[in-house]
Amino acid sequence: MKIIGHGKDLRSDTKIVYAQVTPNEYLDIVGSDYGSFAIQRKRETHKAYGRLKDDIRLGASLPTITLALKPEYVSNAERVLENIEELTDFLSKAGRCNILDGLQRTYILDDLKKENFEFLEGQELLLEIWIESDLEKLVYRIIVLNAGQKPMSARHQIELLFASLHSAIEEEIGNVSLVTEKDQRRRRKSRIYPLQVIISGYQAFVSGTTELNKDNLISQKLQVDSALDMGEESIREQFSEFIDYFKIYAELDEQVFRVYSGVAGGGDDDEEEKSNLRSPHWLTSENTCISFFASITQYAGNGSVEVSAEKSRRTKVALQELVRKLSNSEPGTDPLQLEALDAIRMGKSARKVNVGTYTRRLLANGLKEVFRAEGDIQLSAAWNLAAD
Image 1 (cartoon, rainbow, N blue to C red):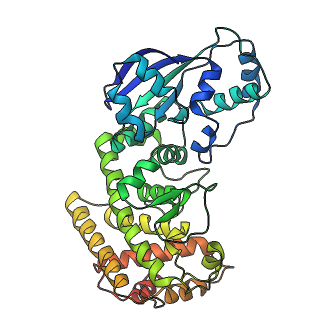
Image 2 (image 1 turned 90 degrees about the vertical axis):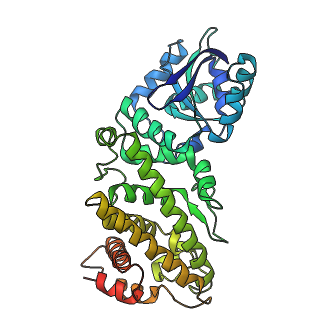
Image 3 (image 1 turned 60 degrees about the vertical axis):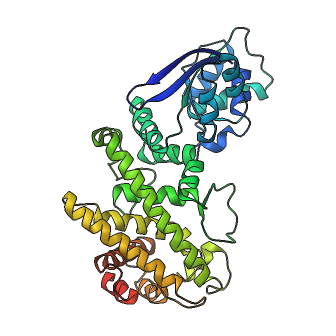
């Protein structure tokens, strides 16, 4: 790597390093596992990339590739920012950066290398490397500034955010693990969540809806224009609020796992959910996660600042009351009265409604009844009030 300059995005106060590398040096830097960063970012196969591959063979100059130094390496990089030799050595180590913009180009370069293509002498790439450890600043940096450069779906923005920051999010929450589909195994303890489920939960929290179309999103709040209109402070506050609720969600999961372990009969997680909601893995279900976070926004996210603050207070009191009820319950009992919830859910004719849609709506509406009562309500009564 040859470092050619430093910069700073003054809007977000993000430090930037600019560098030149050969294609082979670049592939060494991103490492062989670079594709694991891009959750659900499928490799494109359209004709334009075939043409690009031919152009690279002829030595074409590529647009700048944007990398982000992983948060756990930022403090060490900042200590050597003014020492070009040490900084060069530090940033050249494999696996320390995530690809934010340039994944398809990376696939093509990697293909060429695997085909034993010899890149031309003097053929180089330009890199822009973001150096930033502040979790909330990176939320704004990734969602707004990166998305503002080219159209990007809301789901894709959130995936970029969580893929880049999931280690920092784990540290912020404390004692949780967010696992990719590739690393996912049967849960043997609480506080382990599929990353895609938590992404859906955040998306539901932002949009306030239980119906998330991942391919053609109906949520507009995270579209580029709306995100820009929200402003940095609003986005940071919103994400910080999500983290606060996620901490409570993890507390609930710990108690649910303890109380409901062994109840569902020990089948696979997805089979348990299909047959019975009374599962120690209930809070790792995508339906549950979406409903939980959507219900918070639906109840506490609208109206005046004063009303929203009071509703947020009620919501947090109610959730802590649920934690208390669970912590005082013996294993094998049903303090959340999920058996009643499941009976209501299964009583709806699958020929008349989509069961998944009905389950999410039922759970979200029931939780809103719990919030209104600050947790002082029988859960079976809340589920019955939510039934239609």
